[in-house]
Length: 224
Length: 224
DNA sequence: GGATTGAGTGTACAGTCGTTCACTGAAAAC
DNA sequence: GTTTTCAGTGAACGACTGTACACTCAATCC
Image (cartoon, rainbow over all chains, first blue to last red; front, side, top):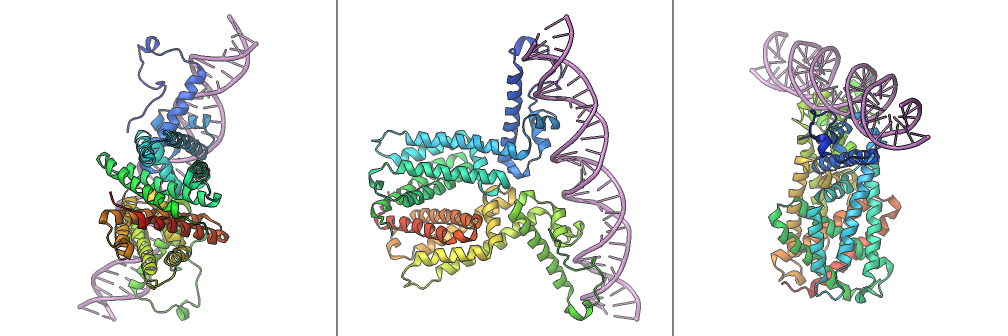
């Protein structure tokens, strides 16, 4: 585990620093440390879980002294909630990506699963964080994820309502369908994260088949 | 948080103890302490997650001195794996219960969801443990749960194969269906655990509708 | 009845934890 | 050019951590 040492204050004297480092405002510098703390926490949490982190090792990994933590966050909880918000923003851009596939697309399911897969691959740490802390997290973090995920399912329900076959479904039924899809896709995300990279195609193929099966039932649904 | 004090050695002198306590063999006594450790860990983990536990607070909760822990488990990991096995046994008895509903039952889905709901209610700590550590857990614990859950889905696939409509499905497709059902039911279990007790009916009703929708698609499935 | 076993005890040690406090020194404000 | 601000420092605290060791004493064995 290498420390990052964001600002090099404790490092060996660097003769080039004046020539190399762009002039940096105080706010930029502060923001850089904040990011280093967030990145350190995200990285460590995706290996060991957020509950297993200590403030001290986060600051060590970020190359900063423990007490500096409090210049940026009031508590670990606050840092955790910040990470949730960040990760959810990532997740939301994914959904938006899937939504924006051209309407006449021959195979919307395939395109959506493909979007999910690529997004998970390129934001592994955010998805690790969400998936792990959704259930495993303690207190504020888990609660925040739960709320945000419910909101997300709500948005998905609105999206679904625009499909012809679903036009006359009740709001309740649409929420049920959205929930089912979200839980299936979260499970898929976890499988993608845990699998060796070669197994991606297999997993996405199965995810497609799951969605296909679900939508096969849709035309025959009668609300009770 | 009250300590349990399994054996009262450190407690106030108990004049009745000779008269009350049944004669107890050494093995019984050891087993009792072991159980106390497991129960303490399970209870604490369902509040705060297994990663957040310390050996010392487990032994304190069990009413035993820290070093006594090593008479029963080599490490926290070993205790964790034991809890996984125990919880999975609970889960398996649930599945068996659902499987044994009379074949001609008018509404098999309803009966199965009811079984799940009651089982979750009466084994809350085991389900908390499984659901939390499935994703959140570290190392040996998470891995063990993953393997066991895959085995379970395999068993469910075999069960499903006995239904008329599924008789000619490929093994692959049966596994896909079983996986979909398991992930939907795990999500339901979490909702049941998190919800205030009054919301049980609402949650089980939605779980039923999810399963119903899935099975609506079954007759129209064509393997590709 | 005497020797043996082993679950549970109590003390001790070296680490790590979160948090406090007074401080430094360069960027920002005047 | 002087003053103010504040991100980051470093020592120190009391509490808690996992584990080593020598112990006690009742159930078990011969």
